[in-house]
Structures are given as structure tokens and as C-alpha cells.
Image (cartoon, rainbow, N blue to C red; front, side, top):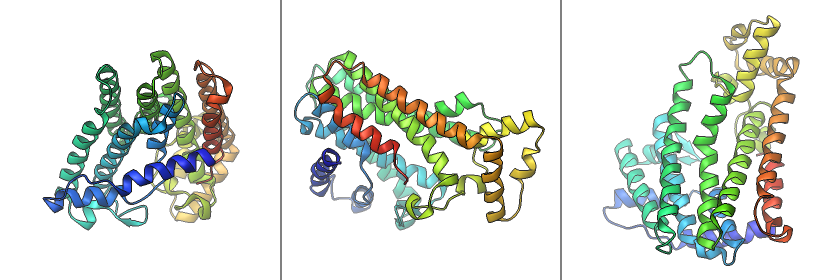
Length: 320
């Protein structure tokens, strides 16, 4: 994708030149460390794409950086909560330094994110700040919901969808919306673009659930079946539990199975027997097409929104 690669290169130059501060070193070094761990940078790219629909993508560079700072702040804190040793194959911040440094550096990144997001025309500031702040709060709500699910016996599917949207998709929507606003979009266009990215992000997350069960480990980049082994209440797990009860299948016997490989294999078969794999695919498709419908509400010609459709198709077809 030429457009995506060009924007990734443009944003990488900003990352390379980024100076968030130097002293105290233990506050700022972890910020630069996590910001340089790489990744696809999809969130900031969406902000640049949003602005690019109406002119120069670089107009939203401060907002793109704000989105990336916020995302990485949340990763530092998530890794502490999950006691995760690795992030993108490298030591997590709290392992490389310690938990207190991780908490404080994360806090500093959140402040920096607000400094960057506020670098826009004064007349846009109330809408941009309100959108960013609401999103930040929803991400926290999504994270708490996810943690709550660990101790809940049952999770309703709509509740699960709300959790993945808050934890992940709203930040994609926010990136697209504030990028578009800074670029010169009307409020109506900005709202439609928010919906597009939110729904696309929802499809993306369900695809993640699906790939965790049926993905190619070489392409997926992590252990297949990890969600099954941790009894994580994903879309497939929730739907399978419901269908198993209807069919008189003892779902708990599957959940409590010993042996990693045997358990993953048993769940892969169970999901197929209950047609949960097909249901997951249909939900991935449904949210993808809803995203494209939202994009049709934008008051720009087909040629203008073509890069977004290309981006959506690329994300939809991913295997990692």
C-alpha cells in the first residue's frame, strides 16, 4: 500500500526526531524507549489519513503524535497490570527499569499527549480536546471491563463488543476524527469518519480473536491458542458457551481440560462443531461492511476516500 507506506515514513521521521525531554533520565528514557519499539503505527497513520482527505496530512502531525503517545502510555501501564515480560520482542518498561518508573513515565506520556493534541487552531480546540478526553476515559473503562471479565462466569456478547470497542476501537475512531477536524472536515464528515474507524477496529479485533485460534503461527507472530489456554472470554468463547448449553454439551469440561495442545485442538474442533468459527467470520464481515457504509456518508468523492477503502481492505485481509 503506497499511501500507507508514505505516511508511515512521514511519521517515522517525526519519531526519529522526537525529544520529549532528557532529565531526569529515568523519567524520559523509558518514554523514548517504548516510542522506538516500532509497530505498524496504525493509529497515528489514521490521524494523518483523516487530515489528508482535506489537504496536507502533515497538518495533523501533532495530533498523530498525541495518539501514539497515548497508545504507548496505555501499553506501559497494561504491561504492568499483565506482568508482561516482553513487548514487540523486547523487555517491557517495568522489566527494563521497574514498576514505579513505568507508572511515572506512563503518566508523563499522557501529559505529553495532551500537549501535542492541543496544538491546533483555537476554534477547533474544544471539539478536539473533548473527543480526545472522552476516548482516553473509554480506553480506561474498556481495560477495567476486560479485567472484570476474568472473574465473571458469563459475559454477554454485546458487553464483550462494547469492551473491545472501548479498549481498542475508540482510539482508532478518535485518531481519524481529530485528524479530519484539524484537516478541515465538517463535524458531519468527522463523525462519519469516526464511525468508519470504530467499526473497522471492531472487525479488526474480532479477526484477532479468530486468528488466535486458527491463525498461522508464522504469520500471526504469537502462540496460536493463547486465548483458549487462558480461558479468555473472546467472541468465539462466549458464543461457544451459549451454543454448547443449547446443544447439551458440557462446555466446562472443555474449559478445564489438561494439556495445552490437546485443549487447543479440542476447542478448535468444538468451535467448528458448533459453527462458531463461521459465526466469527460473519461478524468480521458484518463490521467491515458497516464500516464501509459509514464511509459512504462522508461528503467527498469516491476518488478521495479510495485510500481509506484500500486501507480497510488491507486491514480486513491481514493474517498477523
